[in-house]
Length: 370
Image 1 (cartoon, rainbow, N blue to C red):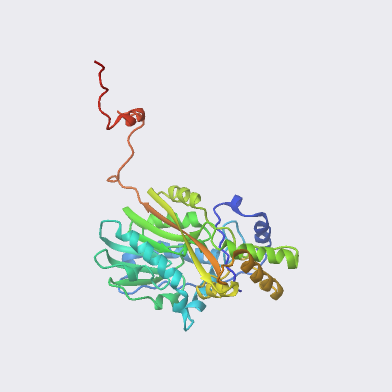
Image 2 (spheres, one colour):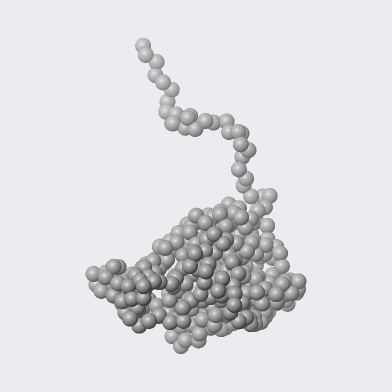
């Protein structure tokens, strides 16, 4: 199945009625076992991993691998298999164009911070799309984590020493106050509990540490969403959520604040990629490992529905040269862990200049009439 689904769930009120009804039925599905081997190299585990966190991970893996629950929309075991399949493709590199571009943009934001980070962490690193753009003068040591071991084995070359840890982004097995920098690129949109994941990132950061991340959100793939919905309405009399709503940029700032971050920066980039047709869009999404992994996903889409969706896609959004666009809204975020050395707002009422006086700045004294 080629379609992409990425539902951001913050609380039960953000789940659409159709999805909530389907999730209620999912509680009767059989339990799916989940096995994740945590491994490190070039560093002793006790130096960086919390033993008590291992016990939490065993329980968390069990809960993450089963359907149902208000905060369990995605099948994480299925997502791991999809990423493993995508990484096993002989031509997998040709599907890395979007991740490589976003990894470069995240690295540029790291360079904007005028300091050296002794220890950094990449959450959901994939093939280390961020590390390849960083120098050892900026990051001295880099920990790479991903849910898929195949992706970790295909990591790209980088200047600084790297240490690979296979771990779920939802359950970071690291001690509190460990890292000076945490980065993430295009992986957080598959997290079931995004507020909890952000709190974990804030926990493993040292005071005055910074989190720099990017995730898809906004109106990403709205062309594909609308085309599939209209085609299913026409051919089948109803539609299912093949592409779920993403995180809004306004919600992201609130979540970072609730997770304990300070001095927040949130902005959005729109990237538009042009393809020969809708089927090429879906093929590339599958090659990126971005196929649908929601518990409520449909096993198949009828052939007639897909053909109708492709025709609608080209008719509604097609370019003059015959290509069709696919829009990706990338949400960039920066948040700092509070520290006493950081700038703080002045107390309310302590100002000694009125806004009304700002218009008088730069003007000379009034001239006296003779």
